[in-house]
Image (cartoon, rainbow, N blue to C red; front, side):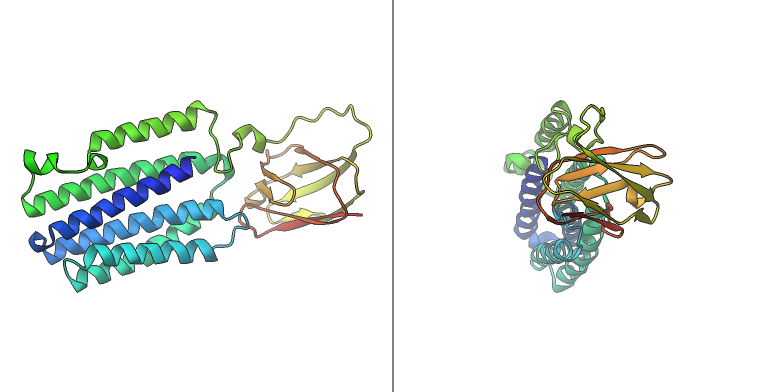
Length: 284
């Protein structure tokens, strides 16, 4: 819900900046056009890149980077072209830089930080867009009551603040929902009570650069418990598995027990938060 709201806000505000720049193109200097197109393009590509980086489960930067860079370049060109070719080129190059930075940020975020970071990006995005509107007003000398009254409601700073507050209430008032709709608690390591002796128990040592052993063998159709026992952890402190349906932040210097439901025969994969260090579970 938060990610969808963020994408909608980015689309509306960036579109308005393009429209407002086009409407005042004859009264904007080349320097002002360059600044407006560069800023609009970079903010869009950073925001979209971050969101797509979060949504891509396999932690591959290719798709988020291509999409966010392309959108940033389109926005930069459309914003700057009505003013001058130089302004459009400035917007194009800013989109490339912003898309790369945004996608890297989204992929590197830990699960517990996703909602906070997206909300922070939303606040920064709104603040910058409001400043761009004011910059266009100053450059075109249209800061009067008549021009303000003609602006769409979404461009009113007070309305934007109310929208952000509402999004914050949804975010923090409902237990910090993630992009998949699951509550934060579902990503925490479970407190296992060993009352069910039928479960298999396995141990995986979590080191800063590896999981040892990196493959464990489980019995098919039998519940299991995996203890991710941590030492000094880095990226390996986040364990992700789309196949097994968990996204876990491990606690350092302790036992981290994770319940694994009975599985069908096959090979299941898990990896660290950046998909650098990996392990497998073979079910026979």
